Length: 129
Image 1: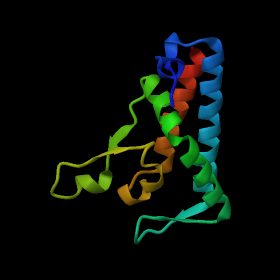
Image 2: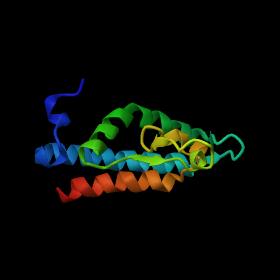
Image 3: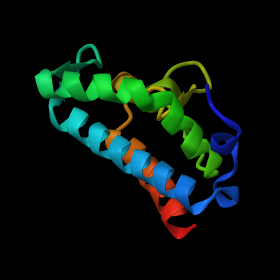
Protein backbone atom coordinates (compact mmCIF):
# COMPACT_ATOMS: atom_id res chain seq x y z
CA UNK A 1 0.00 0.00 0.00
CA UNK A 2 1.27 3.46 -0.89
CA UNK A 3 1.40 5.83 2.06
CA UNK A 4 0.57 9.52 2.00
CA UNK A 5 4.24 10.53 1.67
CA UNK A 6 4.77 8.67 -1.61
CA UNK A 7 1.74 10.27 -3.24
CA UNK A 8 3.10 13.79 -2.93
CA UNK A 9 4.23 15.88 -5.88
CA UNK A 10 8.00 15.74 -6.32
CA UNK A 11 8.53 19.32 -5.12
CA UNK A 12 6.51 18.73 -1.93
CA UNK A 13 8.52 15.86 -0.48
CA UNK A 14 11.25 15.68 2.13
CA UNK A 15 14.92 15.40 1.28
CA UNK A 16 14.86 11.80 2.49
CA UNK A 17 11.92 10.87 0.25
CA UNK A 18 13.51 12.69 -2.70
CA UNK A 19 16.71 10.70 -2.19
CA UNK A 20 14.75 7.41 -1.98
CA UNK A 21 12.83 8.18 -5.18
CA UNK A 22 16.01 9.17 -6.98
CA UNK A 23 17.72 5.96 -5.91
CA UNK A 24 14.79 3.87 -7.17
CA UNK A 25 14.72 5.71 -10.51
CA UNK A 26 18.44 5.15 -11.03
CA UNK A 27 18.04 1.47 -10.17
CA UNK A 28 15.14 1.23 -12.61
CA UNK A 29 17.13 2.91 -15.40
CA UNK A 30 20.02 0.49 -14.88
CA UNK A 31 17.66 -2.49 -14.95
CA UNK A 32 16.03 -1.27 -18.17
CA UNK A 33 19.43 -0.76 -19.80
CA UNK A 34 20.52 -4.22 -18.64
CA UNK A 35 17.32 -5.74 -20.01
CA UNK A 36 17.71 -4.26 -23.48
CA UNK A 37 21.46 -4.95 -23.67
CA UNK A 38 20.76 -8.62 -22.98
CA UNK A 39 17.84 -9.15 -25.30
CA UNK A 40 17.41 -9.04 -29.07
CA UNK A 41 14.38 -7.85 -30.96
CA UNK A 42 12.71 -10.46 -33.14
CA UNK A 43 11.75 -8.32 -36.13
CA UNK A 44 8.99 -10.70 -37.23
CA UNK A 45 7.06 -10.77 -33.95
CA UNK A 46 8.24 -7.57 -32.29
CA UNK A 47 9.05 -9.54 -29.14
CA UNK A 48 12.36 -9.50 -27.37
CA UNK A 49 14.38 -12.70 -27.11
CA UNK A 50 15.94 -12.63 -23.66
CA UNK A 51 19.00 -14.29 -22.24
CA UNK A 52 19.07 -15.15 -18.53
CA UNK A 53 20.41 -11.75 -17.48
CA UNK A 54 17.59 -10.01 -19.35
CA UNK A 55 15.04 -12.33 -17.74
CA UNK A 56 16.47 -11.51 -14.30
CA UNK A 57 16.30 -7.79 -15.08
CA UNK A 58 12.69 -8.19 -16.24
CA UNK A 59 11.74 -9.85 -12.96
CA UNK A 60 13.35 -7.03 -10.99
CA UNK A 61 11.66 -4.39 -13.18
CA UNK A 62 8.27 -6.00 -12.65
CA UNK A 63 8.71 -5.77 -8.87
CA UNK A 64 9.19 -2.00 -8.90
CA UNK A 65 7.36 -0.95 -12.06
CA UNK A 66 4.19 0.46 -10.48
CA UNK A 67 6.09 2.42 -7.85
CA UNK A 68 8.49 3.83 -10.45
CA UNK A 69 5.62 4.77 -12.75
CA UNK A 70 3.99 6.74 -9.93
CA UNK A 71 7.27 8.48 -9.11
CA UNK A 72 7.81 9.46 -12.73
CA UNK A 73 4.26 10.79 -13.08
CA UNK A 74 4.64 12.80 -9.86
CA UNK A 75 7.62 14.53 -11.50
CA UNK A 76 5.34 15.77 -14.32
CA UNK A 77 7.00 13.54 -16.91
CA UNK A 78 4.52 12.51 -19.59
CA UNK A 79 5.32 8.95 -20.56
CA UNK A 80 3.00 8.28 -23.46
CA UNK A 81 3.77 8.50 -27.15
CA UNK A 82 2.07 7.54 -30.37
CA UNK A 83 3.12 4.23 -31.86
CA UNK A 84 4.86 4.60 -35.23
CA UNK A 85 3.34 1.35 -36.47
CA UNK A 86 -0.12 2.62 -35.56
CA UNK A 87 0.39 5.74 -37.66
CA UNK A 88 0.80 3.65 -40.78
CA UNK A 89 -2.50 1.87 -40.23
CA UNK A 90 -5.98 3.15 -40.94
CA UNK A 91 -6.45 4.21 -37.33
CA UNK A 92 -5.30 7.57 -36.02
CA UNK A 93 -2.49 5.92 -34.05
CA UNK A 94 -2.55 4.60 -30.54
CA UNK A 95 -1.01 6.02 -27.44
CA UNK A 96 1.58 3.80 -25.83
CA UNK A 97 2.84 4.39 -22.33
CA UNK A 98 6.60 3.96 -22.53
CA UNK A 99 6.99 2.85 -18.93
CA UNK A 100 3.99 0.60 -18.45
CA UNK A 101 4.68 -1.04 -21.83
CA UNK A 102 8.45 -1.20 -21.46
CA UNK A 103 8.55 -4.82 -22.67
CA UNK A 104 6.27 -4.11 -25.67
CA UNK A 105 8.27 -1.31 -27.26
CA UNK A 106 9.50 -3.48 -30.14
CA UNK A 107 5.97 -4.48 -31.04
CA UNK A 108 5.14 -0.80 -31.39
CA UNK A 109 8.28 0.23 -33.30
CA UNK A 110 9.52 2.35 -30.41
CA UNK A 111 13.20 2.51 -29.58
CA UNK A 112 14.12 1.64 -25.97
CA UNK A 113 16.26 4.78 -25.92
CA UNK A 114 13.10 6.90 -25.95
CA UNK A 115 11.85 5.21 -22.78
CA UNK A 116 15.27 5.58 -21.18
CA UNK A 117 15.26 9.31 -22.02
CA UNK A 118 11.96 9.68 -20.14
CA UNK A 119 13.40 7.88 -17.13
CA UNK A 120 16.43 10.16 -17.25
CA UNK A 121 14.15 13.21 -17.39
CA UNK A 122 12.55 12.05 -14.15
CA UNK A 123 15.99 11.48 -12.62
CA UNK A 124 16.99 15.02 -13.60
CA UNK A 125 13.79 16.42 -12.06
CA UNK A 126 14.51 14.75 -8.72
CA UNK A 127 18.21 15.69 -8.84
CA UNK A 128 17.32 19.35 -9.34
CA UNK A 129 14.73 19.31 -6.56
